[in-house]
Length: 76
Image 1 (cartoon, rainbow, N blue to C red):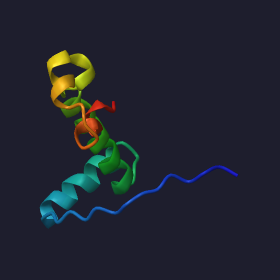
Image 2 (cartoon, rainbow, N blue to C red):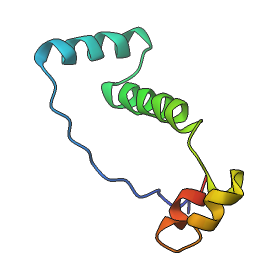
Image 3 (cartoon, rainbow, N blue to C red):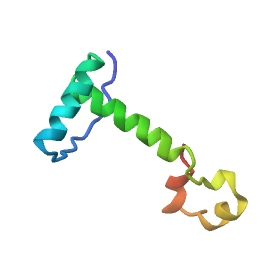
């Protein structure tokens, strides 16, 4: 049996006008609002995190971040 990925719910309050815009944009792509928002978030995160600093990219950062608390930044 395939393992189901864990998920958490995030609630975002938007105005009725924004909800209508999201609904229309999703419909244009033949997606549900949920699918549309997930894809939009994935695209934005990929863009925003593409230039994020990682300890593996910089030896000075590696020295500063060489601890369990900051080790999370080493994951890509």
